[in-house]
Amino acid sequence: MKTNVSNFTEFRKYYLSEFELYDGEAFITFNIVGIDLDRNEIQVAVSDRGKISVVTYDLLTDKNGRLYFEYGVMFERVHLDDFEEAA
Image (cartoon, rainbow, N blue to C red; front, side, top):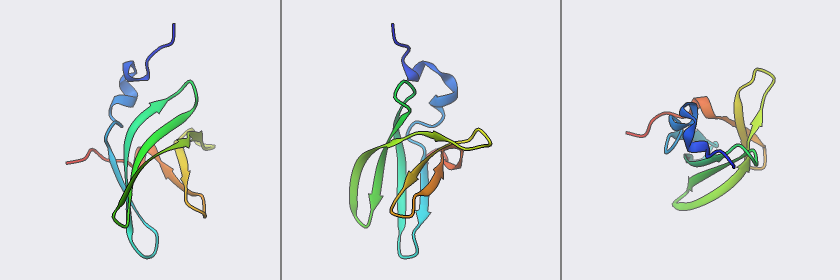
């Protein structure tokens, strides 16, 4: 039987959390929709210049044990612990 990720309390704080990234021209907003540890994937709603997309990224771990995913052509690291609860 697979364990549902939502049962892990440490990941509950991330759901619908928000992070803004400035790419040099505009702010891009990320909202976490879901985390799948079995596949090491994260689903994120990305708001970029008026367009909203739900995108699945590979969930990676850096050398300090911080979870992140890479965004854009420059593979900008977006760490999960940089997300804040949406107000």
